[in-house]
Length: 213
Image 1: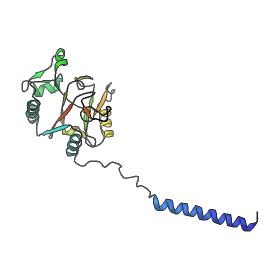
Image 2: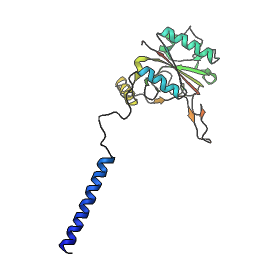
Image 3: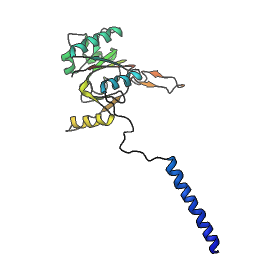
Image 4: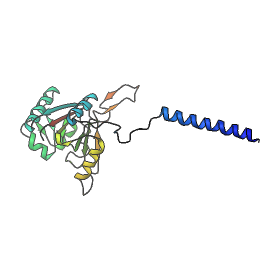
C-alpha cells in the first residue's frame, strides 16, 4: 500500500475517532456521583404520611399516648369494630381498660383487627418494618383484615437502608428470625390487571404515630 493511501486511511480514522469523542462529550454529561439518586426527605413525618396514604394506607398523628388511644377508638368506631386484638405486653400497658382488647390467642381466627408495635418507619417509601422479636410474632400482623400499628416519631428514618442499620444496631446479639417491610395494604393485580387489596394479607394498614415520642 502506498504512503498516500496509508496517510488517507489514517486521516479518515482520526476524523472518526475525533467525531465519536465529540458526540460522547456532547450527548452524555458526566453525573455528579455525590448527588443522591433519590432525595433524602427533610420532614420525615410528613413524607411518611404522604407516601403511605398515596398507596392506600392511613396515618393518624397524635401529640401523646393518650391521643393515640383516642385515635384508636376513633378508628375502631369508623371501621365498625367493637374490639382489637393485641398480645403485646408493652402495648397493652397503654391501651388495656381504655379500649376493648382481645388477647386470647384461641380467638385469633375470628378477629378483624390487630394492633402491633413496629421496628421502624421508612419515610421515603411509606414502609413499616416489623419483626418476629415482638410478641406479635410472625403471623399476627398478616392474617387480620385490618393491621393497626402503634408507632413513635423517633422510629422514623429517611431510607430503607437506615431502617436496616437501626435494626442491626438494636439487635447486636442476633437479628430476629424474620424482618418484614410492609408497604401499604396487601395487593395484587395478577388477575386481568385489576388491583385487589387484601390478597395476601391485611386489606387495610393504619399507622398511629406519637409525634412527641
